[in-house]
Image (cartoon, protein in one colour):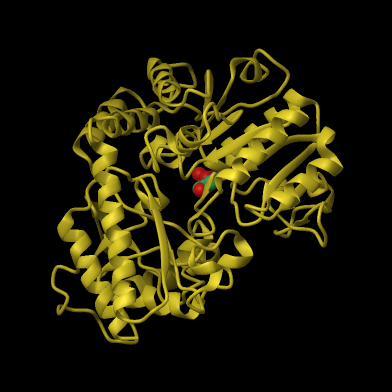
Length: 452
Ligand SMILES: *Cc1c(COP(=O)(O)O)cnc(C)c1O
C-alpha cells in the first residue's frame, strides 16, 4: 500500500501529475513515450507511472507514490529490488571494468552454474536479450537440422525477431502472416503457427511437414498470454513427434526459467514425464537479475555447431558482459539457498488463492494459477467458461473480460498495487514480498472488487 494512502494522490483526473508531465515530455522524443510498447499502458489506458526508484518489493513513482510491485521488471527481480548480495557483486564488477570484449572467468562460472541447474544442456552461450537468444536458437536449430520450417504457437512470445512475429494463417497447416509491418511475407513463409495445447493440430502439422520442420519453439508455461500451462498429454505428444521427425524441441524459458522452479519449467515436465527433456533451452530475465543478459543452451553436439567451431554464425560485443554476469551469478546463487523456492511458492500461492477468494466473496467470476514465483488470473465472462478451469490457448484468453480486468488494474493501482497493465501478461512475486505485503494486496483487492 502507499505509505500514506490518504496523502497527496493528486486530482482524480490526474492521479500522477509528475508522471503525466514526464510522459508528455517523453512522447516528444521517444516514439509513444516508451522504449518497449507495453509500458505505455495502452491496453488499460491512463498514465504510465514513471518509476524513480525501487527497494525490496516496492516501487516509487515520480510523484512519490509507493506501489507493491508484481511485475518485477517482467520477471528478472526474483529477489526483489536492491538485494544486498547482488548490489555488492555488481559494484565490485563495475569497479573492475564494464566491458573488455575478451573472455572472463565469470562467464565460465555463470555457464557452469546454469548447466548445473539445467541437466538437458551441456553447453550454453550468453547473449544480451531474450530476443537475441530465441533468434539465435532458431538459427542454430535450422543450421543443425539443415531444415527451414519452424513451428510456434499462437500467444507465445519469443522476442521480436522477424521470423517469430507471426500469426496463424487462414487454415490449419498453412503458413503464417507477419504481425508487424516491416516483416516481409517471405521471411515468415517458413513459420507455422498452431493453437497451444491442441494435439490434433500438432499431429496434422507434422503429418504435412514433418520432414521439413527444424524446430518447434514453445513457452512451456506461457507467460505472454497471462498464464497458460502446456498440458502433460500435449507436451508428451510434442516430444514424441519432434523425436520421431528429427525436429528439435526448443523450450523458450526466458520467463519461466529459474522462476517457476529452480530447474525451470522443464524440471516440472521431467517430474511428471520421466526422462523428459527439451533439445534446446532459451533463458533470460532471471539469469540477468535485472541486467541485460540471456542465454541459449543445449547438447554439446548441437551447440558446437556455433561459430567459432561450426558454421552457424552468432556473436555479440557485449555478450557475457562482466557487470551483467556478476548480477546474474549473484542472483542464481541466492535462489539456490535452501528453502528459497518453497518460501517463494508459498507467497505466490497465498496471493493467488487470496485473490480468488476475494473475487468469490464479491461474486466476481475469476480463475487463476501459479507456479513458483509466477502467477496469472483471468476474469471469464461467464462462470463455467473453459469448463470452470483456466483458458487453454490464446483465443480462449482473449474471450475473458477485458473491461473487468482494466477496472481491476486501475482500482489496484490507485490502492498502491502495481499489476501488469494488460490482461495477457503474467504476474511475478519476489522473495522480498512479505506476508504483510500479500495481506495488504488482498485487502486492496477486496476493496477494488467492492468498488465494482
Ligand atoms: C521476455 C521474453 C522474451 C524476450 O526477451 P527480451 O529480453 O525482452 O528480448 C522472449 N521469450 C519469452 C518467453 C519472454 O517472456
